[in-house]
Length: 103
Image (cartoon, rainbow, N blue to C red; front, side, top):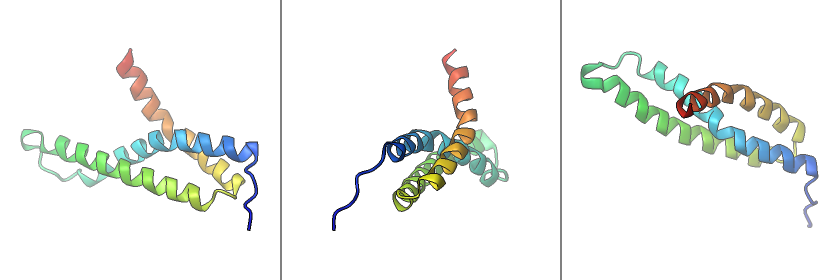
């Protein structure tokens, strides 16, 4: 059984999805990490260290999850396009922070 070649639209959507999934994962991980570490003691910066490690772990988990979703939905271009638009919206805070740090 031969698989059909991907269309240019599928290629564009998958590339944009891949590029925007990491900043979106960082944004989601940042929000979730602050919720998880809300009740952590702040003795000697404990809450900051806990949040940092949760952000790292959750960013990796959400990135892997988004790639699995892309692999499962690779033939459903319209669904991936909608998720890509959501990733673009979620990536805005990460890009703003990166811009502030660079200037």
